[in-house]
Image (tube, rainbow, N blue to C red):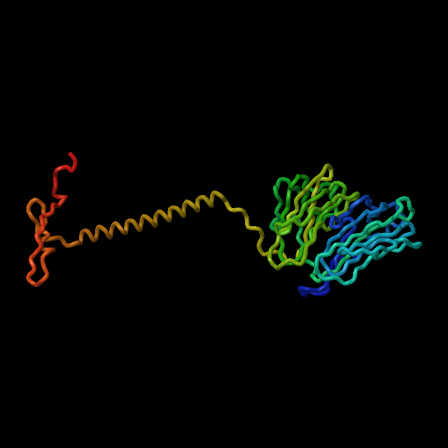
Length: 370
């Protein structure tokens, strides 16, 4: 049994060992790979009783990981042949033939830089009818400087798992979806039905089911495309890694899985997630548009009240000054006022200016227009 994901220290940067089984959607198969059959005499020697087998030239299995070393496990047997390893563009051809069946590493890399790497294994048999034409893959392990996440949340924790639309998802898994963590999970068959998982910290692993009725799904990390994966397998298996990410910042992050069904392979089943830290807050709920409209109305009323108060104050000031302004003591008959008092003055014997009387328009009683 391969080791589970473990870490040697609680320090932020340490060494963790991760494991992914051959049936995980994280391993992408190209060609005519088949699931190993229980009729194989060596079937019980494979991890978890599963392995993938190829008998055709150029069949390829590809895996992308972030870490410092990677090992591919399988078997060397009397009917196995040459295979080629591709690691970040470099290649090496090895021999899988052995008179006595051995189960263990097919390839182990040298020390790598802690970053994203791509490894692939390809069947390199030359003659398709060669009896030694087989290649199998059992599982993959890799090491990383990031500590393995430890905070586990079931898919029913809806504070962190947001399902859209909600009526497209069911908690009744049925008889064909077994082996779920705590016997709980969510499943959908609807095209474009999605689940958004909120987590905190640098890493998150999401688990679910694979099998003949499970299909493809697209993943987004913090709103950016992170790839499309295929959960369709010949045989059913639960607790498989559907996606893994690490090396992120300490803030909250989101992973969105969207169902992309095809024919009878139409299910997306989410079991649980393991994250570095459970977020203290989740996605902010959408605003209530009615409440938002009432808030806008209240803002308008406050603004109108403020403008009205200013206008009332200005009116009061104008009336006050008009009532308190001193009036002339000299009035001529007929409503005229003698303006000479404002025009006299000055010294030096200067003569007062002669002014014509002015009519007070308020004293006229005749209409302005006839």
